[in-house]
Image (tube, rainbow, N blue to C red; front, top):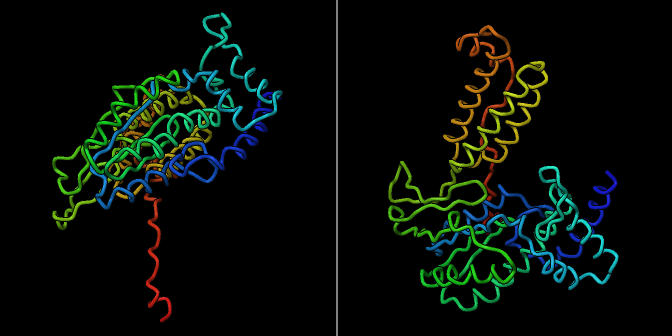
Length: 337
């Protein structure tokens, strides 16, 4: 407990130092920045159609492969306090229990440590952000836009040749710092507003981004965000495991926790255009709830019709769109009217 309190204090010190250095494009584990808002801002930035190619990249097991030597060198650029550096190194080298043996990792950030997110951000800041802005963008013939949330990043290009050149040099850049690209989660995607039917989709922050046509006027195309299918299945697996674990407890107690879980899910995935997926998730959660309530005893507790009659009384929050587009600024003439 005391160790966590100290880590929390050191984290605040590191945040105060590095917030001046971090770029706006880095939106993970930072005060005042959220993933859902980041996904909305990326959608707005791409809506104009200037960027036609997207490279989505994921670093393989990043948190397990952070190079301690490189990380210490990065910390020493801004921190002259040797005892503080030694304390952080102590956390990095802390033993991990593995099959009854204590192992001291040579790479990676502290497992479950309060300090881990800021250390990861410092490492990735030096590995990627200034390099993309000052080196990659400088050598590109077209415009470049990027967003990074921890080890998950997308870089958007105006020109295909620039995108392919970046994808060629990225593995070498990561290798320099002891990291590697997860090829199965990385790809070059065509994302052209002028040719939406020939464009693909990319995944970022749990959403699939893709071009869609308006039902009222097919000539109008816009970017939609939809819950990524793997994220959707993963959340249902976690919900199934949790309901199985708590099914024999007091109904009122686990319904309270379930309401909290659902509110959190809707607050994140309740974005404009994603209602069909959140409605699907609600149906699946109801199905799982019905399944595990009927396994609280040897006898079947209720029929589906009885379950449906009881469901409103449990006051489970329904899915809703929580995202509100910013109000456009009024023209100066209108403001003076």
